[in-house]
Image (cartoon, rainbow, N blue to C red; front, side, top):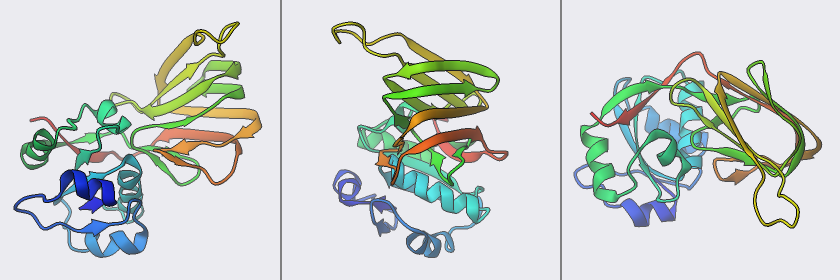
Length: 219
């Protein structure tokens, strides 16, 4: 399946396979008819931005269809490609989609009904951030990024305020765990896999789901 004009231009045609073209961020009505045709243990190759993959994973989660294997054909700028070690070269990605092995990987959720495929981010902000029981931020942060941790659950990266004169970024703090919590004043807009939130929020949580999803990776 290809999601959005950019994906169609970059990946089509997917030779030898049927291609279903969907909007850049597909909805339930777009996805459910497609999922009805895929058995558990079947494989979908998805060409699109991280937001498209997140939308698909939400439907798999809500329909209890996490047994479907996903092969990602990521855009060159995809944070998910970095997180999961996936190629963005067309031929390499297609070869992996066909010949790779699907393995369970952590499914990272947020407390607003979304999932993190590549990265959620926000900033600047003033507040506190915890990863598990560890406080990793207290005060001002120029940028906060939340990504899946392939080995466990969630990785939080906080970049401190710019130093005097704004010449260099402040210190960077990174910590991984099973869950992360953000509380801040004033509220901030969180960008979820490239899609800005509709309104500022004063708090947000991310946590590893009890079940994994199946990602096609190198043999």
